[in-house]
Image (cartoon, helix red, strand yellow):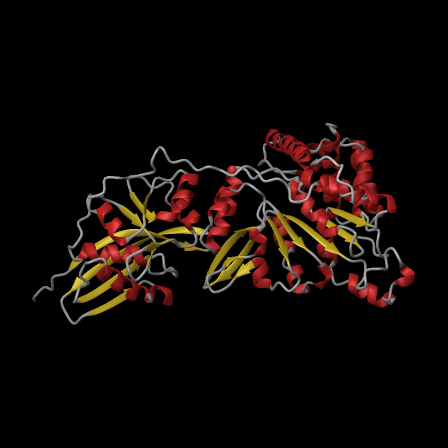
Amino acid sequence: MPTVSSHNARVRTVYLSGLEGMVAEVEASIFPGLPSFEVVGLGDSSIREAKERVRASIRSCGYTFPNQRLLVNISPAYLHKSGSSFDLAIAMAILLASGQVINRRGDIVIYGELSLTGEVRPVPGSVSRLLALEEQEHITCIVPDKDREEALLLGVPVIGVDSLVRAISVISGEDPFFGIDSSDELIEEAFPEPSVDISSLRGQPEALRAITLAAAGFHNLLLVGSPGTGKSLSARILQGILPPLTRSEKIDLLRVESALSVLPRDSIVSRERPFRYVHHTCTPSAMVGGGRNAVPGEISRALNGILFLDELPEFSPKVLDLLRVPIETGEMKVSRNNCTNLFPARLMLVAAMNPCRCGKWLESPSECTCTPSMISSYQGKVSGALLDRMDIYCTLNHITEESLLETMKNDYTPESVCWRARIEEIWEIQYSRSQAAGIMPVRNGECREGNLGDLFRLGKKEMEYAAMVAHQLQLSVRGLQRMVRLSRTIADLDGDPDVKCDHIIEAVSFRLPKWGEKKI
């Protein structure tokens, strides 16, 4: 029986599945027969469209596109694949199979989008792709030139190319350069000055204490007050007193952001914690993530930062209910295309709301136009289960005439930088306490350990007092634990090694809503 000769070649590439970088193999085979070009391997329409980009790019660079039967397979074939990052790998496999390029580099991992003229363009998900190659040894990793800064941040040796011709010269050995140049260095941006300083919050001592406690323990915060009392201002101030992102936190955040778009340089070098201002028209998929290829949502984009929900009762109850699980577990599961993606959800939830729809019931009941049933209905739009997950309730009132006069003066000293340093010291204390207990370093508001009495240094009297208060206020077990965690933060902020009854009393005062008759 006669044999049919064929030419084969293979290269490796890496694609994005949720937030994970997945290594795949691109195989190209050229057979005698009528000219055709097929791509198999469970790819979507974006991969099928790559055929025309690859064909035009190869010809634009002066090479010949095979005029025979051409078959490209992307394995593993049982996993769904999408995106334009396969362009460069497909083009290189075809050139190797046709004998127009000789591989003198050995094992190759390559990805990037091609233009019709052979230009190599960056693709989303670069951080996750590079992390997937972090443990790969003895490989030649070729990436779009604009991904070099991400590679510098991660310490992954790569070759950045801006065109198909450059990639060919690297693989064929004509370009001797390999790896990150030792003279290259990623210059990180200095931590920016706060957009709003904490000293601008005048005449609101309770709000000042609440936001410093929220920052010190990474606690969820609910701000309630009439319009114009400074709820949004307090949230902005809170961002300015949070310490900068650590390297590992920054990489985790960049994984999320890079999955959504190509990262600008400002995002790569910035160490500021994210502040996601979410409008009440936000949909469930926009909040938790989703879509055809399951991209992260607002919860994940606020990773290690603040998720701010203004006008909380105006949000859809379905959207608010979706927040309950990720707040507790620190992660969100999204299932798409028969695949479950795990998105991170470690964040500080800060929400703001009016006491009623007109906003006047709290301070000027006589001017309030809302009926009791309207007030109850408005406040009832926020479920008790979500309120139970808030660590601090803070009520803001209109400030006095003297405080209003103070806001017009420019004689105050900026304080946010000093507070940021103080908060960072407190976080280090909490990390050390967690490590000493043999658990993962966490801040007080994130601690999910059951034995909080020993971990947070509560004596027998303090534990009995906390249980008695929780019973009288009909707090849930979750509410009791959040009260104890807040007590520990108050003690840390006051410099006390042990939690005392005074700390518990203050924590209870922040667990009692001062609006409406409903006790949470």
